[in-house]
Image 1 (cartoon, helix red, strand yellow):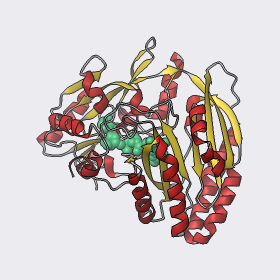
Image 2: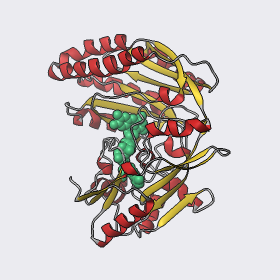
Image 3: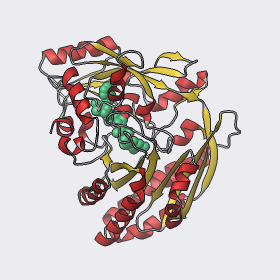
Length: 421
Ligand SMILES: Cc1cc2nc3c(=O)[nH]c(=O)nc-3n(C[C@H](O)[C@H](O)[C@H](O)COP(=O)(O)OP(=O)(O)OC[C@H]3O[C@@H](n4cnc5c(N)ncnc54)[C@H](O)[C@@H]3O)c2cc1C
């Protein structure tokens, strides 16, 4: 779906003018961040607001460790903004290409049982509502709206500023290794609770898990970063180049997938390094794929994962992309996948040239049986009726949306399905 018009506002006032003009012209309007969602959540049928020119820092409160960012700021720009003040974001996802607004609006998260997703770090925001007015939300102003606005699916208005609670800059000691999958599962609770940030990848058709265990250390801790050559070999040559070739071969000759996966596990190998947090959290992903991810109550991760393994065996599918398992603390954002419960995430991927429908549908069935909630920016088939049952504050969110956007100025087909349908 192509937008009727694209605008590049540089200021909050320009966003206000764009919203008012769209409403007057009978067009819907949506902001797009980096366009990294796998769903149609960012599709803009009317006016598309590209916020590439609305970036950078608005203000910083060093004492309270809070930064206010313009809404289009990309996550990879944030470390340089915060570094002079000795601050960092508390936790991040796998990549840093997203905009701050896009990331929080879909509930983007990383891993770590004691840490929430990025929206949980938000302590304030300013948005332009459908009337064209600015609405400021913080712990002292319209505070009751913060848990909705901080993770609003782009349905409540156009964010123009986001205030993030930061932490003192820190480094991460990263240990990445290949381990027996069964051994990892046998001690999963211990591994998750005993680490600051634990996750694992499982390559289907192998009995190995690639684990990542990151430990937070003070900024003054000695650093042993990956050498630029080592990083290039791991991330660009093996992680992207060879993986791209492997996926293309696997697509053409599916029986090669199990041996390729076994080889991938060997090539990814073990490594250990210590570096600034943002350099450890963010990786590069240049092989294109489609993804579905479900959040489950943490205690349901193992039973759901076991069923997923059995499913792949039973159906004799050949799956070239790994399954990723992560964890997060409970939070209070109304539409957070981790709302009110400690959560584990199971993500399945397929190379973009392979049809994901059958695999994702069967996995989705398992996730739903285990009380799963789908990631808002990743593929799923649920509609409003199914989602309402899974979110205790769903009706509060839609009531707020009715109030802020009664004419559905910020609507698109995806939002119609998940919020109205
Ligand atoms: C390679 C890759 C890796 C990923 N890794 C992770 C991961 O580790 N963890 C995870 O949870 N997710 C991950 N994702 C998903 C991704 O983080 C989300 O889809 C995120 O929303 C993308 O951010 P974006 O800036 O591209 O937003 P977009 O996709 O452009 O937009 C997402 C939503 O935000 C809204 N929005 C954007 N800007 C504004 C604004 N100013 N005001 C109001 N609404 C706005 C849009 O309208 C839309 O509804 C990954 C995706 C990819 C492609």
